Length: 64
Image 1 (tube, rainbow, N blue to C red):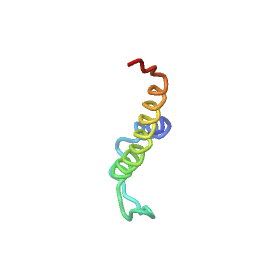
Image 2 (tube, helix red, strand yellow):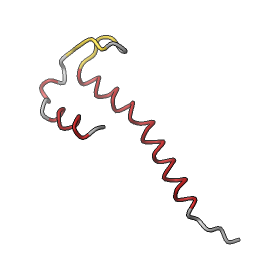
Image 3 (spheres, rainbow, N blue to C red):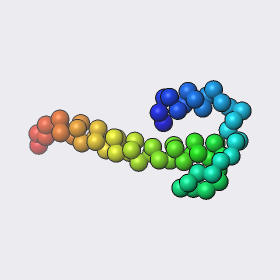
């Protein structure tokens, strides 16, 4: 999650139960929006891990 987003959430712990209508998901709380944001980030993190694996593998010199 973006560090700016995290800082904003840390400043508003008493606001996590506020509700709103979110176009793509309907009614939700700020707390549930945080869960959606985190789940959105997971595939991006997995892709970065895969890419790091490919980079490291390209450095391997195979000597049978």
